[in-house]
Length: 406
Image (cartoon, rainbow, N blue to C red; front, side, top):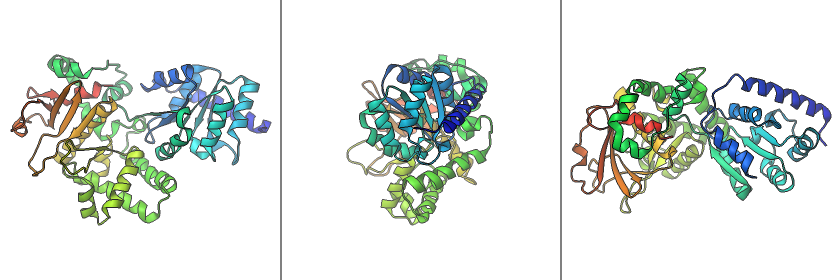
């Protein structure tokens, strides 16, 4: 049985948390989906994502919206608190139907406690962790009981919603491909926001504090706290991870695979691959694989939006902009659930950037500035060839339109 004094303290904190939620009237676009899962399924719902994406605010907003809900942060609970007993008391004494648990990784054996609640209680649970690595490990233990949902960085569309309170509709890919000239006439005024979005605005935590230090602090916490503890790494590993990440940020995208990182950092290829995969699990970057069976299966390493400009200090601006264009494209394509690979030749000749799979088509994509031409499509036959430009131009499809896919 949980002590009454603790229950009273948690009730006060729950009330304060709900009051604070009122300061944030706008909700992440994931909100309706999370609410549906909680109210229409028996699944335990977990929210994963990079630090600073707004997971805590989202939980508090759900607690206010649903009613008969209780918000608690696991890192405020005394060591050894039994979440099963606590949830049973909240449900039995106070009629709580929905329990929102923030920072669940602070609880010992949180996976086992959630299993027990799912199997023997009716209360519905949604939880977060600031450690995406922790949740990635834990989802296997919870098996069929858990729906783990990613809370991504903003899409360009969601950024405009929070930044300008401008609620624009989703644009299906088919419409972008067929009607881009007409659509761009309505959206070209948002083109100047590309730099702000890609430089800092994609991370929700930067809305109230648009400071580069927020980005670098977030990265440091992920590496020095999450990776160190969850990944069971040494301080030497942590130093090497920072070295790899800074190399990726400064090297650009072309040829930034495991082998080139290893050659330039002096870290073994095996270790580089291990670190890159961990950083992907931690939501710092994305891995894009090459297309084709007869190519070396080394990936392109893509940072998530907002990281590159703040980590790659002193790098030529043209190279930064080119990388940010590609990362903008990949972030939105993968966020829309589409399949994309990069193109790589056997002989090393320059090819277009990506192959995008859409319906029965293989779309060949080249991304560049307003003056980008079709020279890199030379010799490629039988496939739809598309040039994406930023800023938008008559030469191709404006890249920013892909920021409205979701």
